[in-house]
Length: 162
Image 1 (cartoon, rainbow, N blue to C red):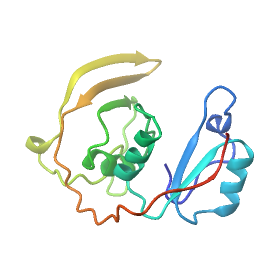
Image 2 (cartoon, helix red, strand yellow):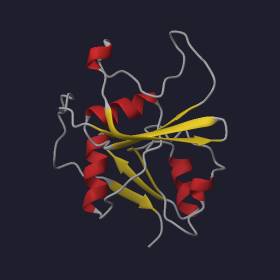
Image 3 (cartoon, rainbow, N blue to C red):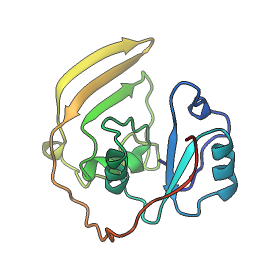
């Protein structure tokens, strides 16, 4: 899921020999890159309104009941707030970064106190090389987004495998 398709040309995701890849984007994003992905057998789906909840509903309607969202802070916050994330796999590396504009694994959730923090249940931990993988289930939270999505809008499929 990438609003602007600022994705690399070389990536294991584009190898669809074993499993298909679907890339979801905003309508009109990087047409030349969409054609490149389609030539690799990657299916590109455009949405007029780019929203994790609508994407999840679309994928569910297509029969995908489990989806891996690999994303940055902005998309992860939006997906969590819209209620489409049920389980989190978070890698913690033995590195420290900070600062007002430093990258964050989760963007703005509107929660600024530790008492507001989302808690995970059924948490497990696994060391992978020098990183630690923390996995757990997100407790249901209310949909805090104020969506004005027109339900008649539907995605447009650009290319991909049959």
